[in-house]
Amino acid sequence: MSIETRKFFCAIEKEFGVVGFGKTNITASNDLNEETIDALNKQGHEVDSFGIGTYLVTCYAQAALGCVFKLVEINKQPRIKLSEDVTKVGERILCRHPFIESKRAHVVPQHVEELLKCYWPGNSSYILKG
Image 1 (cartoon, rainbow, N blue to C red):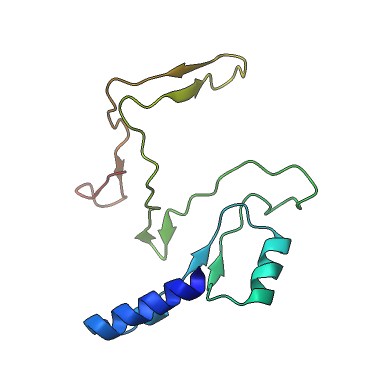
Image 2: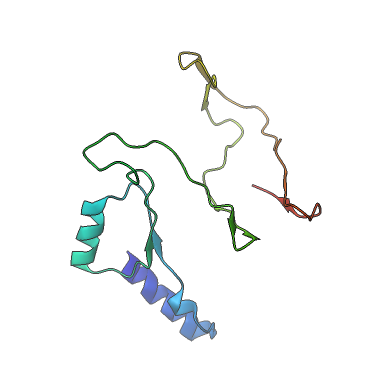
């Protein structure tokens, strides 16, 4: 898939004259482990970087770490992950008590409202939406 993506990026660069677009970084992630990366290396790919989180501390044979790292800043520049997985009204979600694992319930929100607004230090006019 990364090879096809690279070809697409190069075609966009050529067709629209977007200099450097063909060299856009391609990142692979989603439960990657050494075996998957080795297989990709053997078959050939155009991946520039790998997002390894699940098996970052433990190996494939051991239980997964079960945590998420969120990149929020690079060289004092804010960063955000764009996601297609946004909670929607009418979609059933699982809610858990923060301290008592056995207390949980499936709910269907009738209204979803953003409660947290992140203001970057030194610039109260910049609001992170997400």
